[in-house]
Length: 283
Image: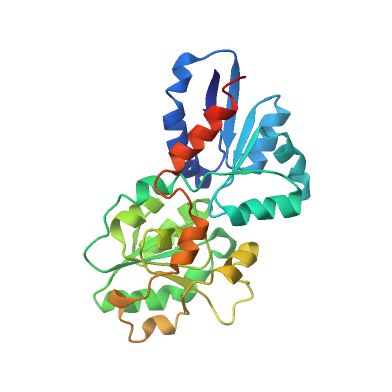
């Protein structure tokens, strides 16, 4: 039996590995003769292979449709397993890279679907690292909402968290570092572009895509196909947020998007571990 290890140089990948590693830890009690490394980053995957690790597993993070670069093709090809969240990402990996993969769903959601929705209305704003300056365009809108007596929280991609936490503090907005904290405290999630928009929809809660009409940044450019096939129902700019909005009755996202993008919802960790253990059963 193999000894399972994980490796991640960025906080944004931890959630995609922790629960899987927790379940695989029981296998490690019967350690035998070789290590298997799990990672959710192609950069880390390449680094491990260059360090001589023969057995590696790539777990695609987020909702899928990562922009895999040609220089990462070889490390993906060398991986023992390529685990992806859904058919859409599986098709992209096959079409663009010519690589087979196995669908496991999204393990990080297994814990989140069990968290009860807060009873009191609370909004959480979140910004992706590719357009971190967007928060300044929404500062007045967030202040307006708080003046209306609405609870407002702040979240951001882990790559820019330290910077964003300071900005939220300066705006008297309570920062929530982890997405799990957001799920525990907020009822409505507002984000410029991120897989978390769809994860929020999978939890049965209304998501809002933020945009700036005059921005040069093309929202969702890294996941263009995703937004085309499954558009977010609500899209708001800073001016819209200061209009008369009935936050308690926002429409929920498409059930088809949830069904298509999140197979094995609630049991994805178990699915991933079954696939991994089955592969190495006879090694």
